[in-house]
Length: 279
Length: 289
Image 1: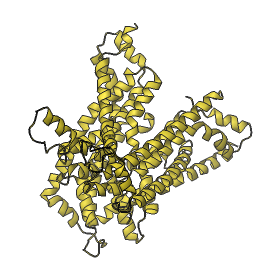
Image 2: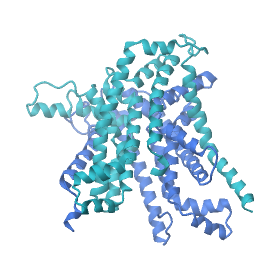
Image 3: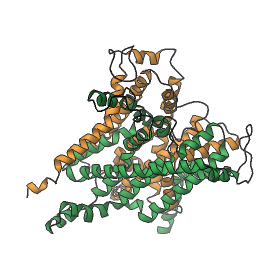
Image 4: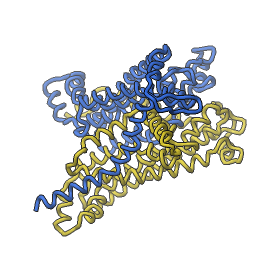
């Protein structure tokens, strides 16, 4: 019996998985290494010395385009999208626990928005603002365009959460005399906090890296991914790798912090003997 | 009492759903209607949107031989990418769901697959350049091994590079829904099949694959829809030579030709809607979560 525990072709499957992981990560590791090229180094190996030259270049006054402006915009927009996605998805998730007219329609719209080719959404927003005579800007049309991409993830995560949510907790709170708002604030939100952190992660990172939906919706100035794409077409030095290393580093930091926060919250729930959030 | 309490709960539900509905209305539904409306508009160099009801934008789309070549190229990309990501994604999901015994290892391996999704796609495309370039790692390896004498040009800025980019970026969209479906399969079903003497191939084809169909459908829709509308991967890794619908829309937009771009987008949209309808027919997504 114990022997049948190990599924067939185990070594083969492990090998395939390992190769896939290498396939996923090798390119990004390569450009991280290459971003430390010496001043004489080029876009490919061999490394001609090791230096911080290209990072210094990136911070230098002669750096190409408006990288730091683009970075600031992307970061600010990411935060705005993150907050909006969490709040709006939570509200919509709560709404779906009751019946309301248009519930199915809204779900289908969210799914349609998720799989709609981004170029179509972007074109529509661009044309709409153009026709209405409203200037396109990253914090108006850009924000809206990003939300059409992040909110479906938020809503689907909320569905997953509330499908497993035991209403007994709220009933108990109500029996103790808690108001509707108190129930949500002190019972529901603490229980689903790890998932809300997950939605925040989706909101920030998907916005921070968004390109396709931004293209026509962002207005005159670029966000970082647009700037990167523009840089890529005439990149001749590893300076683009240095920027790639920095922005990927930031993404990893955000992922690490949010995953760690979710784990810590869950641990604390466990430690306090709460069975909150468990199926 | 019951009726008195029911009404406020209902009103609250509408208020709670309102922000999301409003944003989708303004930034998704209206823009999609805009695309359809604008596709019938006229345009001139200095007046980019002239309200009208003309069909020549569509005539232009359907009468140009380039259109058919572009659509054919895009559909071909779609089918090949779909086939590769499906097989690869299914294999990886199968590994995650059935080969890893403890939940923590499963979670860690799943996270390893997911983390790149939260990093920049553009950077992930660019990061193939040192591999595939003329003096890239693959050419260096091939030449030092004596397999080829001259650097291979087809590795970068080619269909191959674009396809590689798609598989690299979008296999995850297969892994997640398929894994989700597999994780719900009752392990006792597989035990029962085993007890009845089913081989591992039979278990795969008669138990696992049928029960994984919803996940496969969702993943397929994702990959097909993304590749159909893609213009970023094609521009970054295709180097300007590879045609795609998304890119031709984008090119028209860069010349501020909104109406022809919109006509092109409507055709693209039609294909996507067919896919959504098919998806809804095949699976009820809410049950899948």
